[in-house]
Image (spheres, rainbow, N blue to C red):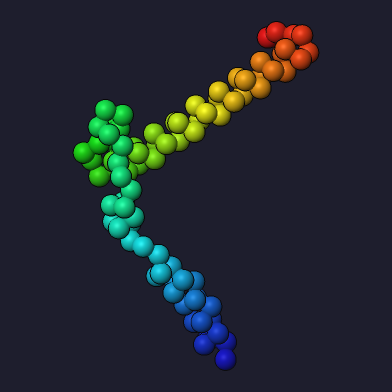
Length: 81
């Protein structure tokens, strides 16, 4: 009784992993960044370079928002840092 239950417990997580797309299909679906901005263009890691550029763009937006918020707080409190 315990052996079939153990096999079932181990087989279910493995079966759940089978429905995901393969890494090759996922990498070909994402368009890589242009060679001018993607240091990894022309390599198997070009998709990673595209994702890295997207992350840098998001970080730039967050930094700009933080700068504006700090300026607003400084103006409201009359302090400067």
